[in-house]
Amino acid sequence: MKISGTGSALPKKIVTNEMLSQFLDTSDEWIRTRTGVLSRQVISDEKLEDLAAEAAMKALDNAGMKAEELDFIICSNVVNEYITPQLSCIIQGAIGATCPCIDINCACAGLVHALEIAESFYQAGRVKNVLIVCAEEPTRMTDWSDR
Image: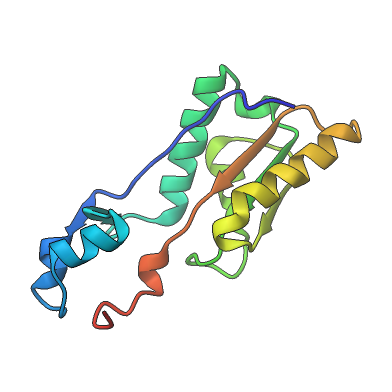
């Protein structure tokens, strides 16, 4: 098994440490020295499924593949707009794929777990081309008043 292509998509709204210091008891220096984070991009008027589909299309393009060539889609996701359908199904429809798809709820370790699942299916001879999408929207869970 090998990684044939990658793609990413980020929300357009940027929140800097300085912006956070306007309403939280913190500073750019405090955040930067402890985490290395200077800014973060957060979902505002975008939809997670649109960003996920954009990243998926970029990965397919990077791999020189078409959605019709996919055998399986695995989406790691903890929080999104819908309980059902799964985010993987929404991505599948958005990119024009017709393969089976599943969501896994593994948070930060999602990519590792998705790779393990893909490798298992690949070793069993069940799939050749697997699309893994890790899409998260932590801003939906964030309490912006809690330092």
